[in-house]
Amino acid sequence: MTWAIRCENVSKLYRIGKSNVTAAEMINMRIRWMLGRVINPLQKSKTAKPVETTHESHTILDAMQTQDAPPNHFWSLKDVDLEIKQGDRVGIIGPNGCGKSTLLKILSRITSPSHGGFRFRGRLISLLEIGTGFHGDLSGRENIYLNGSIMGMKPQEISRRIEEIIEFSELGELIDTPVKRYSSGMYVRLAFSVAAHLESEILIVDEVLAVGDAAFQRRCTEKMLQVADQGRTLLFVSHDMDAVNRICNRAVHMAHGRIVNDSKIELPKSVEDKQISTQSVSDITRSYIRSGIQLTPAVTWAEANAPLFDDCVRLDSIMVLDQNGNPSPEFDVKEEFVIEVKFTVLEAKWPINVHLHLKDLAGHYVLVSMDNLYTGTDVRAVGQHIERCTVKSPLLNVGDYRVDVELWPGAEIDHRIMKQAVISFTVADDSEPTGVRGNWPNAWPNCMVRPHLSWDVDLPVNRQAR
Image (cartoon, rainbow, N blue to C red):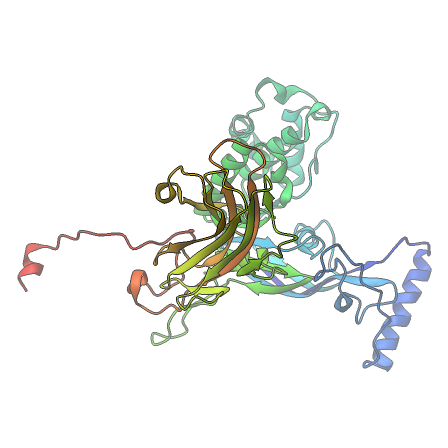
């Protein structure tokens, strides 16, 4: 399959702070910096101090982005090499300020790279910012023609698609209203409808879809999948990892202006070589969500700081244990584990039940388990109670998980004990052809559970007789 987009050493340099110098002074400054690099290539330029964020392990501006840069400048992108095949659906993820939007602006020819270059094949349409390419005083219908013309479409091509565009946007009679009276969501509806329906080989979509309502986001997801099925190439930037997992067949993780992870599939070079996929899209998105998060398999509270309900029930600890009874942050998909909860009843007053809420790190529910069937409705006796919930295998798919614990007093009372994301752990897969995996050689499809279900297989009669 031939390439659709190819970036080679793409870099983008920006100035830190306001620019109070003239154009001539800026040119002289750049010439002096370039001469300095030629005369003494080993000398490092002065670096700006990274701007700290509230996260302990992340800065918006990393020290590496100011190395080899002129004074008071930083690299928004640095030496980005990226090749995208025709028909690929590529999700670009990463924290704010990592260079995602800068890369898309370069590919959309809104800005030019400071170094390096890029090429693409075919017509490219981009949807980057709300209102880009729209004139506020023109109606939605008129802006369809304006926006299409900016994207290189002929009036006849736009006319062939205009009814589809209007229908998909669901703007109805408002299509003839000046867009300055549109809400941000209506802007996105019109802009995406234009970008998705006009004829192009490459479609670039930034995070603007987050503005639309849930129903329209689902329709946009379906439309982007249809676009990819038509052989068009899609670049999709989003902080919604679910959308990336649903839409994309490749994920690229960026940080501090560089590509740090890529799920690109390497095809075999010969018949003897096996097809190797270093990581799946879900692996990349899961790694991004987990960035900077420390897995905690056990939490024990001191008596003075323990969660207390109605001065009569105290939560002491919660742990995830391996088969030897030891806290562990990692389990194999073929390994069962135990979630242990300890609590102390100080006064026999409530029929306490334990509820466990198992979620992934993004907060999506996997399951809820309760002890209601086992403990009855009797008031709990005074003393420490220990309950263990065994999670059989195979059940969970590869991924990172967290557990919320709830001590329910048997009535709809607001002051029940509810501790969220108390413990966390990961489930891994050794990829051995055993258990539920069978002879499947690749990464398991993206889902939260992979239980071993029963199959009845009827073979042909002649095959059974052999």
